Length: 94
Image (cartoon, rainbow, N blue to C red; front, side, top):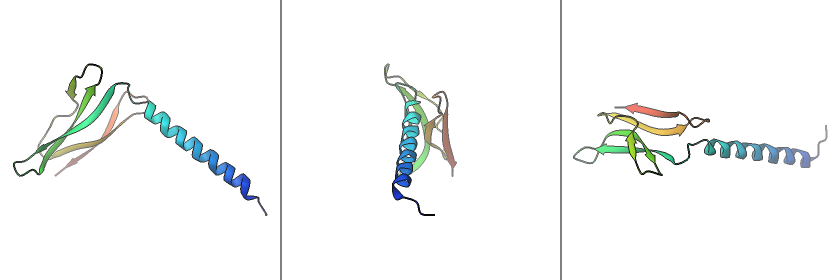
């Protein structure tokens, strides 16, 4: 079967556009004005001791702990759920 390369290129462009649009909508699901970040506690010799997650309300400037800092527990790589109501994160231990 002999196919013309232009329709295949157009289909690839549509797939790329849809993929990019879905990435943008996932970003928009993050609650407005709320930032999740991590804080690392260090040992006396500057080695990481623990990492915990925190929330910052940009409008008020208030910060609150999301996870408790615990020795040898590292909470990181947080991402909002698509509806912006929950977080998923990675937890590592040593």
